[in-house]
Image 1 (tube, rainbow, N blue to C red):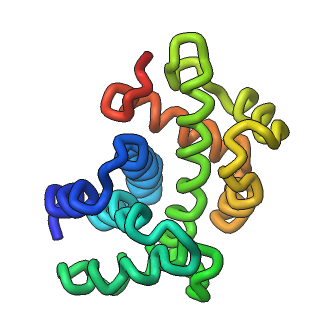
Image 2: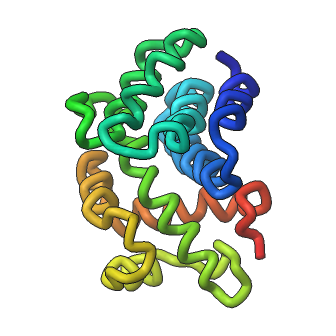
Length: 185
């Protein structure tokens, strides 16, 4: 599957502009890590773009992403990518083993949280976000309450990276792609 086909799959199943932007935000962070680690950028990109493609048709655990996985298999998505997508759900029973799997998990909730923080900034821009503001908002349980703070913390730990460095790395990646993500202000 090409990146274009992956995006078309996302758009076929995902009508929410917010969820489409989430896929792009996660892709932005995951691809930045792929480049940093010298990994297969195309594979990591496809994984991140597709990770929540079925969320609107399967919005409840454990349906997402388990019921989406056969759709991806039918469309020729590799087992490695499908496994990584399954592993991003803690309840899937698929342990995160590869660096790709760990990176997808580490970037998923964080990208959404950074986006939410960007929206409450005066300019509605990721350019105003830094690791300190993310850490502060993580303590506010009423803010973006659907975002799992534990997943953010555990994701960085599973990757073996410092949480603040991980947060700042993802912010910088998202800043570089702010216009496409709708976070340029």
